[in-house]
Image (cartoon, rainbow, N blue to C red):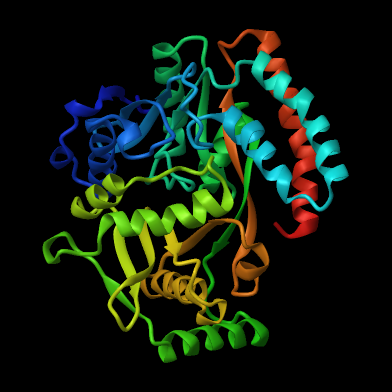
Length: 388
């Protein structure tokens, strides 16, 4: 006889982090309250919606994001699947080699855009969506998945129910359970994960020694920041992040604000470190969080005007890798820079959104299934071949 799983959906202002025993639950509750306090847009400028909490057995807390589906300002790929699969892709066309290839890709994207718009892909609610590029999971019993989904479906009838950031490595048991329940795996990203730090082979060990040597001999140094010592200027941290992830890469990445940096630092949710030069000016920033044995960095940025040979990204990266190693944690280094991360010991995995189609009209579900099949057969093999 299976034990009954108790699931409640609560408003953010009803959450008191101190009522939970586990530190991961307290972290999630505090984060949900911060994002909801002045509206999510005050923390993630290109997201619109409501942040709620899922409480499982009075012990585990998961963010539940309900997007404003009709808002033109909801353009982060973390808050809108249409922004992820269409808008983000359109913006990336400029990176293709020739105008002809760009035009052909734009034409190929048109039926995908129409398909997802007709399917109303953004009429969804997102379980464990922190509005960050990587959404870590607490220790959630896979047996609770069905009960959580049922509670969300009952509250938000007719919407897609989406479990964010699921992969076979860091969330293997949850991934298996969701597949057993018939959830649709929808390709999200190609990610890089590392849980082995010794015996990586002579080539990788050589690279790591070189990176540590660069960091130790550099004129730059890492400095932890805390709310009680003045820390680093949150606006400077936000500017460094924005120039890299928003201006250089994509406006559809989460646009984290200075308020996000300040409040998550002051609440102890994200641990920030800055890279400073001899003049004590911050030229790089990392913000890392650990949950359920996994470390990731939702905040990373550096001064793009500094000479490439200064190796700012390399210094920040080895700092993160060594921190995960020293703490005995799996290092989830998110997506991008595949060859760089592979050469330092990370392994490639595919991350999915696990989509519940029950309760959605069959014709809309069929369109999403078709899109998922296209991604599985075309996008994933292409990314694997290119080492992305």
